[in-house]
Length: 265
Image 1 (tube, rainbow, N blue to C red):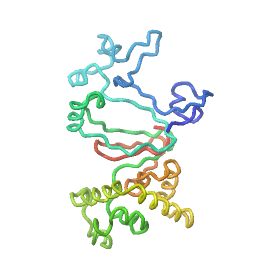
Image 2: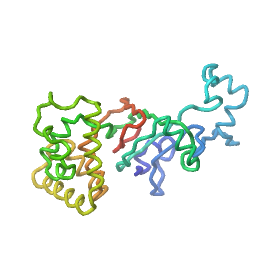
Image 3: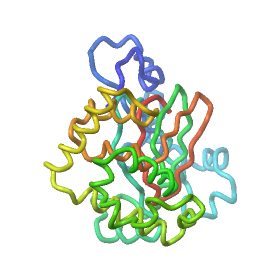
Image 4: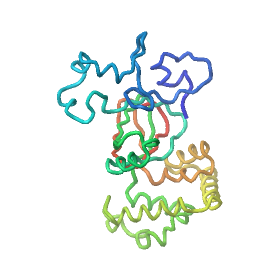
């Protein structure tokens, strides 16, 4: 999913913009995370974690307030540079309570007990999907896309909401709205591969024949061509589509579904 050397901000950061090997550059991590710890750029290549534990460096780089926390002597965040060519998977990071539970049960897989809120800042034009749209916006897509309406079981799941005015829909973030969203997504992902594939192809065919009706249709086509017949293509109509210019940023709290689509950040 990374970019070639000439395009990638990761390659630029590593001084490899002119690399001719043909390999892709996707991620650059900076921090003390055990999966990919940083080293000091000198002849000894000392681990950053060890460097920061030296008394003179602790005093220079850490405040007293920081040293009083559980992150004493370590960097409390992981800085990542991402160069994205094809859409990343849809994911949601666990909350603090669940992160602690997962770490205790599977420390080999879940390396630490912390939640993972994210802040992505665009270095180039950047696209992302994040958080569920209001129910009314999703219903508008269901009315226009019969294949998707059938997949979610719109009549059974939403009932009178399908024809109700905006004012009669459940409040944003209410339990009632969350239940409707959960039921729709469950139905989409529980559908058989054959049914999902047929629905995706019919919708793609309609867009190709009549043209895209909105930016989400164009995004659907682009993601479908990257991941043919993948049920995740439908998420462009459920999650908010965000387009950022360099310098703009997007904060994602724990438990919020998201997927980065393209760009450097």
